[in-house]
Image (cartoon, rainbow, N blue to C red; front, side, top):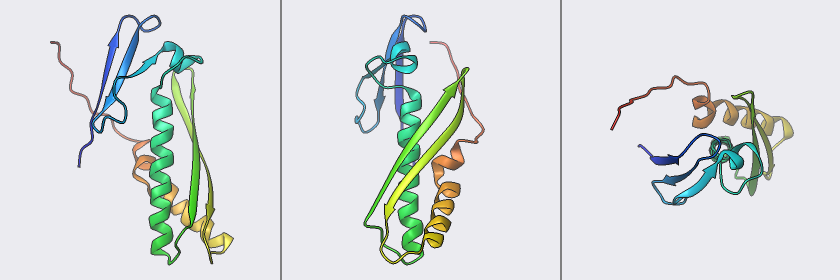
Length: 136
């Protein structure tokens, strides 16, 4: 399975602007800019999208892990904070709150640790990067 997204940027890094479109068109020419990334400008930014991806992936993985352990969650809510400092993404911090009937706190912690270690996005955040570049 492959998923795609396209970024378009116009102008310089600080004064320019761009837009992002995803295969599903959930993002459809959604604006991003220096201000939306480094200040309080309107639009999205790569770190916000990384946080959404990690929160979503982890939460779904936790549901699967709990199911495999014999538990059906009523609700799982996860927030994620991606930290960018000095041009480097340094942290992805997850905060999860779940309602899982019949589970002990110890078993829940075990399942959450499994999901954190094994969701595909967690694994991808320490990855080799490939690139194909060409001039048109």
